[in-house]
Length: 470
Image 1 (tube, rainbow, N blue to C red):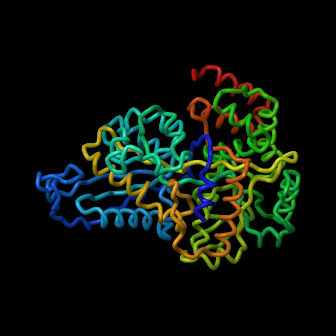
Image 2: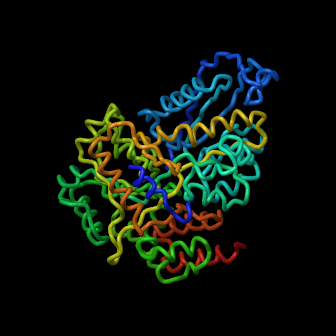
Image 3: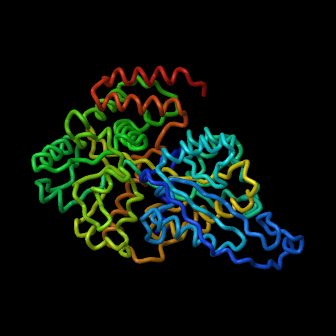
């Protein structure tokens, strides 16, 4: 298992936009903050390692997006999840009291803009490595000194290279720590519903995918559920298509080392447009968010699944845990996962990246306590990560699972691991440049509505890239 996880985490360049949650904001806090008397030198000096006076409870606030915390110990409801995270951290860190809040990713970043400007941003912040980290790094505290004090000068030897590659793109300082890795660009499917409605096997080629979509539509089923309103769904889909067609070019155009007008880029835009013109994704896809609008049809709270396919990532492994109250009902649908069907004879590519990282507000008066939460998520919690949160560890010496895995969980895990360990992978889920991300989302929306041609989309991307200084 360690070898498989290590293979999964191998990559050259990693960026992330994680899956998004519902529009509701959920926070949790606990009263379990009993005062403890420290016998350490810090206590003798009337302070502890968090910088608090002896006997004082340090309050910290934590904010991120839904599913950045995973399916922690089987909790999937927002309120239960945040409460469980807060309770566990507070119980194991006397003298610190954390209040945890989660929300949709877009809402999280919109709130950060307002809160940083008002001087009320959280102490600990979920941040996606890449363009988002680059945007906010000036408001985050460097953390390398904390890590050196915790693990020694060679602290980075504890973590996989892939987990920090994109983080270090933001300069010599370390402004965020990753907590979990994921793979995306995959299609989960309800094999029972597929076969009952005339699709005997998951499509192996793009042409078969098109035919399967028409067969499902003929049976009055939604074909492939796609969250076209979500930027991360659009990025994942387009990057997976382009990487399938030409992986090297995909790497080069996103690093601005190749032209966006290359013929294979135009071809990738064309295949993206076919999702809509050929009826592969559901009607109204561009106005659909995956969480929770689309996902609630894939799996409701009782485990009922009413759609055949959904475009999603490895984090959904958590839905196949035996301890889930809905597991037996959901599992009865014969749930499986696959990469994109091949395009013109080339196997479907997957995207591997750290799903979320954590930063400390540079203006926080409680940075030492905030670091304790970051360390807890990114190091102490790694056993929980591999025990079924739906993510993969960021540590080189990744712990093996200590829980029994269901047969369908293991089968899905093996499928994703094999794909991520293959040559058909790219290590990012968006561009490092915000301008590229914004323009790409706009062009994909235009392609989906038919308001732009693939050639026009490529030209617009080239124009956006031309205005960026590397």
